[in-house]
Structures are given as C-alpha cells and as structure tokens.
Amino acid sequence: MKKLLLVLTLVLTPALGWSAAPGGDMMDPNVNPHDKASLQRGAQLFANYCMACHEASMIRYNRIAQDLGIDEDLVERYLIFKPDTLVQETMTNAMSEEDAERWFGVAAPDLSLTARRHGPGYIYTFLNSFYVDEDAATGYDNTVISGTAMPHALESLQGRQQGVFEEQDGEEVLVGFEVEEGTGTMSESEYQAATQDLTNFLDYVAEPVKAERQRLGVWVLLFFAVFTVLAYFLKKEYWKDVH
Image (tube, rainbow, N blue to C red; front, top):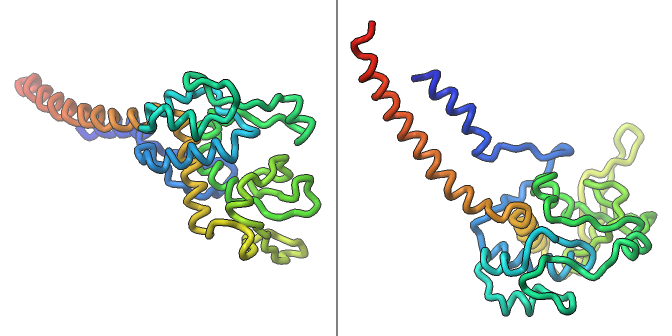
C-alpha cells in the first residue's frame, strides 16, 4: 500500500503545478484563473497599453467574452481598436514587423504563449522592474531583460522609477527602486495590483482552459483517491487466502 501511494504521489505531483521561475528570483503574481474581475481588468490593460505593439494572435475576442463573462458589445467597444476587426477575430494590431523594427530595432513578440514559456512570474517581474536609464534608447532599462528595446509602456501609471544603487566590491550594484513622487497616476500598491491583473490575463491567454483544467483536476484526484482505496480492499479480498 505504501509503495502504491508513493507511486501515485510521484505521478500526480506535477499536476499540482510545481514550477520554478526562470532567471533566478522572480516576484510572485499569485495568478488566479478563476478571478474573472481580475482577468477583465487585465484584458482592458492589455488592449489599452500593450496591443499598440504586441499581439495575442492565438485567442479570439469572442472566446475572451465567453470565458470572462463579458458581453460581446462591450468587447467590441473597449477591447477592439483595430479598424474593421470583428469580435470573431484574434487579438492582432495594425503594426507591421517592418515598422516595429524601424522604430524599436526589433519586432515586438506575440505574447500569446509568453506565460507558458517563461512563467507568470517573469511577466510580473518584468512589468515592475523598469528603471530610468538616460543612456538607453528608450530612456529605461529593465532588470529582467537588460538593454530591452521595449519602452516603459506603463510609465504613466507607475511614474518614473529610479534605480537605487550601492557600491559593492568597487562596483555599482542595483539594490532596489524608488518612484519619483507625483509622476504616476497610481500608488505603488495600485500599480502592483494592475500589473498582477495584466499578468493574470496573459496567463489566461496562454492557457484559456486552465480554470476548467484545475476544476476537473480536483475531481480526477478524488477519483484516484477513491479508486486507490477500493483497489486496496479488492486486493486484500483476492489475496486473503494466498499465503
């Protein structure tokens, strides 16, 4: 019985969602695919601040409406800004790769699978780790992607975030951040909540069935637990006369 439980534990543990964020310590956004209010706010942030450059071409607007409980008319009004785009189409923008490369030096990546590839902690940390760098082409650098070509798209919300440096072993080392007072429309906690919502939405885009998978997963685990108990007693019944 103990060996059977050990095998089941080893097999089923990955389904519980153990994962490690790439690139060292990452901030934990505590994504929740069941929080529809957060996902709705994240969708609006993505449409307003990200889609000018980035696409999420693997999901359709009407799928978002269905999953997040948003009326399709509201989706058309508040999430679709590309002319002549239907609610049945995917989340694409009007920027060509040629224009992106000319303006930023590199085409902006499609964000459909970013959360699956790097983890939500990567996205959340990236959004919170821009700091002013006067030598950078965009005026900002980022601790997650050093030398990033991406401007700080959420600067108007967060404000101008300065890096705090300390001298360690003769080198200037970034040890923290400090936002210039009055330069953003949100407080620190409000900005972190907003980027958490945005990360939550991108995590949903990467796996729209995640909430349903987790819901069904609970029943699957309960089935295995009940089946294991029944199998154990059935085994005892069959083998009770075998010595």
